[in-house]
Image 1 (cartoon, rainbow, N blue to C red):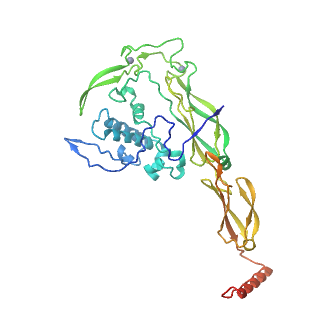
Image 2 (cartoon, rainbow, N blue to C red):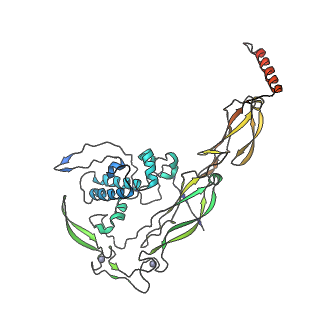
Amino acid sequence: MQAGFKLSAHGNACSCNPRIFSAAKPTSSSQRPSRTRGLTTVVRAESGDYYDLLGVSKSADKKEIKQAYRQKARKFHPDVNKEPGAEEKFKKIGEAYEVLSDDNKKAVYDRYGEAGLKGGMGGFGGAGGASDFSNPFDLFEQFFGSSMGGGFGRSGSTRSRAVAGEDERFDLQLDFMEAIFGCSREIDVDRMTGCSTCDGSGVKSGTSPSMCPQCNGSGQFVQAVRTPLGAFQQVSTCPRCEGAGQVFVPCEKCGGDGRIRESKRISLKVPAGVDQGSRLRVRGEGNAGRKGGENGDLYVYITVKENAELRREATTIHSDVEISYADAILGAQVKVTTVDGPVELKIPSGTQPGTTLLMAKRGVPRLGNVSQRGDHQVHVRVKIPKTLNNEERKLVEQLKELQGKVKSPFGF
Ligand SMILES: [Zn+2]
Ligand SMILES: [Zn+2]
């Protein structure tokens, strides 16, 4: 079976992920002055540094970042915090967490700032995928679950709601030529897949779910909560059944999750023209969803090995050729290694040291449009001999003498 792939193009908002929200709005860093009402400081809706947003130092470890996110996200969740700008800030906090909790994104952010995640900066290439931030509310629920309560999370029941599977990452190293012309690879991906024992239901076979005794099947319980912002009624998800309204004996194989970790072999077709930092998306080959939720996607991150003779810069190939000074003067035919194999290249007479000769269409096929190819640039180096034998010296001296005569002011 050959899995389909989808490329995340540079800078384009990925239109195939329905969970994306518009985080990539241009972040005008207009710092509105903070107003105060009573003792409560009103939130500033500035773009802000991710570290500042979470209130952590640059050296904060994952645990601190996680803790900071929990604290800040709760504080600014728009269901609780009705101050102007709270929702923006809440979203920004989610974004900050996503970046700082991911080693790759964090590295890019530390180097290039927010712009690095939005453009295709540096080695990250198309990988950054600009607006690849998850829905901040989903992120929040991942942390607090629905048990945090109805006040939190989006309105509506969480009962037996389908949960989409998480995306999975796979790192793939390609040879120089494989990246240029594409290849087929079998990869073994370790991810969560539906449990065959319980058919993904999580329920032990031979038993069936029964009504939750704590919430009598409603999946919710209501509670009055006092906060500094006033008292309100909080509809919480039933902690016993987690909102499902039902309880069951868990499947022994998957522990009730309905999924187990399993390795799967996938035939991956790598398209021609991928580069260091490219990311391939294999739809639906990530982790299985729960309760009928969609599968996550598999993202294959590409790294490319170097080549001894050829260097690559996007679709252009560079290489060096060394010729004798006699060949530079008289011209010559040399053999040059290209991605298509050895090719004869004509060095014109009178070639200057440092000249770049262009071999059109001998470069890398354009990703997504293989009929377009880049060029191969050959950088000519002229070798000047460090020692000469007597005969050579005599000839060069003769040549010098001859040139002296020829050099009249008018060339005659
Ligand atoms: Zn099971
Ligand atoms: Zn319940």
